[in-house]
Length: 287
Length: 287
Image (cartoon, helix red, strand yellow):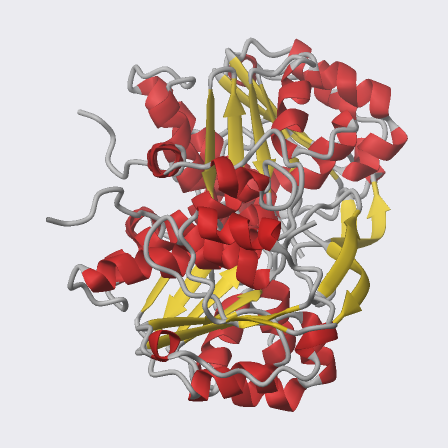
């Protein structure tokens, strides 16, 4: 079914801002797939169709612990030889998200972009196989998003707070540790923030949750940037983390992109308020 | 070194209320060990010294993931034949905590207590070896505290929210899922609450963190009960969860009971305010 980092990210971010998606697809990516993106207003001008090629493909499975995806098959396909050429519009996007793909490709896209705030997501596969290229790519971005176990692996530091500080020394001034159902933690030069996951009774498909988190997080940041706020403001980053969590929580309720297609901004804001209610405690006893 | 569920719990709870500890010790438990408890005002009248006996002993180790304790040795020793006789004062305690030990023993203590709110902690060892006795003991208490993986194992339900509901059907009307460094979640008949862990850069020894959580949680609940509040009030339970997290976070900063011995109520309340600051997000954009 339709999926992938760029698709999940774009749909989630589309609730907050204009989104342009850049990447190659094969002949198997048809009007139906494009229609899912365009149905949410995503600008698809930079989707490059490779004639005779096949779209990137991933298949995995989940066992008892839905926090861990087991990869059964990865085919880079059209990504193997992809040479990104960003349109004028994409080059001038103020916020850039580099979805999980070869680190060298992420770096090339970052270097052809004028974004004032670039974020990068990756995974253990690249850490294990292209560590040096990944560290170089991380050095070019402002924000790193990784699973907490991957931040530990990247830095060789078992303590997450220390691992995040070590990752910041590689370049980014914001590090987001994704913790699956346990939520997420954010580290910046002078702040730290943590939220639990929004707990659901029905988790249908966790695939894409991390990308929807990134979409909600960066999409909301861009909406605040457009309103004149700094994306490094503590309060703005915290709200962005909460929106990211809410978007991820919706995505896992159904397979593929189904929930993102039926979702509304009203449902997002309603869940954000509920999320705040179930995570807030008072410090003083009521008098 | 000095440790064990009752010791860690008592020290943590002692910052909020009067604590009586019930249990057997051997000849190896001397004035120094008693002094640690009495130094925090814990009432030790119900500690029964078994002449010629040896105190309960546990040894374990931690690997890269400090959330998982690996048991190397457990010796029940004086607990094997312990027949609890609660003093008048202990029988009339309004809140009772049944630390992690044989479920049948927990049940006997619960049945000789007049507590209006009884809580029980256990572990996978009893789940695997004395499941029926554990389920019976759970049926006699108001609150169950377990690791999230253990709640899933107890109920055979992989989804935590559903697993907590299934555990409530066994008797308790409050279920607390302990999630190690990821924090904790609370389920009651009509509410749900989650907090992340207080993230530390230096974790020295996670042993006893769960019992310190229980001590902060139940100790604070008792202080509110004494002030005329309901321990089932949502806001009271949430604050209790936050205090439990803070006590656990202090305990892991040093080995054994060292940090609890130097801790002050001022430090606890200062960290509680910091904890609230780093877990709070706004819902509306500032105008």
